[in-house]
Amino acid sequence: MVRLSKIYTKTGDDGTTALGDGKRTSKAGLRVEAYGTVDEANASIGVCIALCDGEGKEGPAAAIAALLRSIQHDLFDLGADLCVPIGEGEGEGKGKTRLRITPEQTRRLEEAIDLHNEGLKALSSFVLPGGTPLAAALHVARTVVRRAERCVVALMNEEPGATAPETVRYLNRLSDLLFVLGRVANQGGEGDVLWAPGANRPT
Image (cartoon, rainbow, N blue to C red; front, side, top):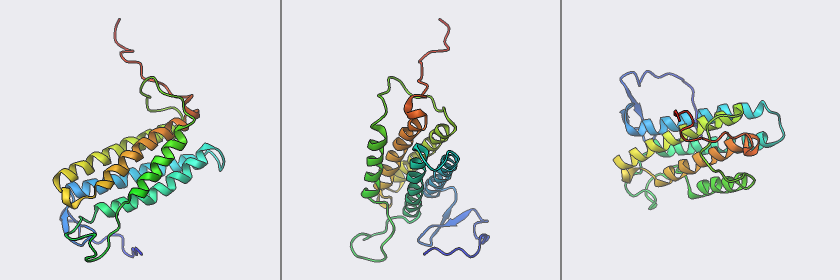
């Protein structure tokens, strides 16, 4: 159980922060950037939930809100995963068991994508971000998740043995799910505005 009794400690005033294993590192490091961007993605999803709640307790928005609330818990799991580098011998019965994102959590996103995409018509072009306020917020969240994914990929390139590959897979699926949910929130895709290549170029 996490217990937070004091909000400020002053220990980060020198530009360092503590990882989950207690080791201190620069706040500008790739690992901190990765889990910090996951936190930003979680906050952007919180805005989506607030917009869902503003649409009432029934209909597509209510189902989206319930799904997003469960995803917020996953993203805290993912942040906990990233803030503790994989140690030597981990997973071999040695030392403390760490909280890691699991393939089951990723598969749950895939099932949600299939479920919500089933009723949407196929696209003939890319979708312009926007539409209803909820759809627009879901597109913003999608792009933040994509940025988090890029940060984690950079971290994996830098510390491949210390970073769980499932974190990348989860974020990849989550951005896809948020795209689908954005279409659902846009009158089931009927309100989507499609990109017209070269629309503003002189003829």
